[in-house]
Length: 81
Image 1 (cartoon, one colour):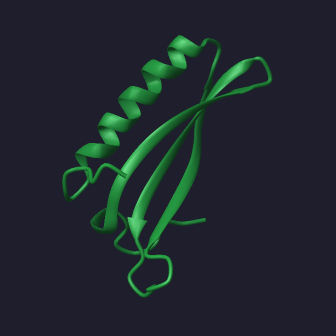
Image 2 (cartoon, helix red, strand yellow):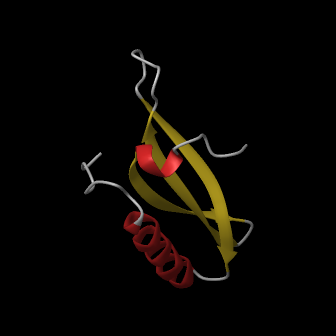
């Protein structure tokens, strides 16, 4: 799946989640953004699998860095969603 047009301009929040997977830890990045033409469900979330790490600690460090880097590109401060 490719990013919708204007993805960064419509982004409202980013969250990283860590899940165990096959004895390792996988980091997922969830980005929420406004849908332009939807009144019914105005927010859509896109999830991407980022990487797998051997320990939870390393996954947490990586997830924290990824969220901070992605949040720099948000057009507005986080909304607390």
